[in-house]
Length: 483
Image (cartoon, rainbow, N blue to C red):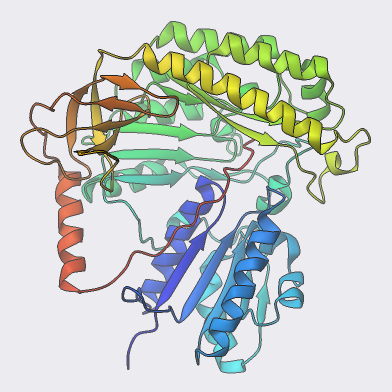
């Protein structure tokens, strides 16, 4: 009997990408495989986001498209999981009755059983757990990268930001024990992984569940002792919980990268109060100053919401002022959209859409101007790049590869002697800058071949031996508004 095939489509944040790798691992553990290139999968799984307003439209549009495919494909199944499934529950099946399985954020491990039950019973299965059944990181995984990995250290959030629906969908914060986290990291490194990103809805609150306020700083330092682990990143911290022991751990642990994603959300103290963000701009800028004092080369990025209910011209100007002071390497900017179930959705003084759009465009223009200036300052600097998947860019006759610098900036480079593999390391000199990337047109001197590159090459050989298996599509939507 031919194995049934699957495809996972992912929307939203890094935690969703992490969960999708577990969904893929669960399905492969249950005997499913990926379809050949150009073939329709027997099972299509949507791992959804509920943070952005257009998430609903995108999901139901894709479900509508697949209905016609399912109508002519005997045995095809469609599953919907993730945050929107947790939020809407039976509404998914009501609006799209051709969906076979709906599961929530707390029970992704149930997917193979639910698919089989739906097939045998010939009716939709809706199962939404109210609390976490098993930590996702303990489930089988099918990672998309041979050289980099997500490692969840916590799930859920104890904050009550008025614009955010995540706590009601992911639940209260649950922390993994440090030993379990480090054991997973060591296993990943043994497989060839060079870089890990520690994940949490509020990653630097790690330890609150077992009463250790310095647990996150200790974990960063412990990562420094993992032999073969070259790069450590984390996302996303909360300014209210960002303490000096974390800054010291970052600066003093060589494999913790000089990069920080620190959500601002607004530069107005009045708006921050209405958002129920438990910090003010003075504290936020103080953190930025201390990080740069400890790590002058650090690249700092952020999230900002434009048009929160009641935001005045003065409030928006305060945001622009903070952006000018902070000099972000990049900013993820969002137009506020009310999400049902959040306090802010019921607030009076919703800002007119045309005003929100105009402010958003001004903020984007300023953010790009600053990012470009910050990137131009790096021209002439030599940086070590972890070579990324894919061919990179082609400008005219010049074909470049891509890699990530320690500060996570994207660099398109022209290879010299010896073509590096994804996961290998090269050193490049920056020759040009753009707002969102850097360029190196100087030929790279040599390539440091790595275990990660070996792992990537072995994976390519396995895929070639299996002939035509295609990578499961990962359709990333807009980044979430992080806590």
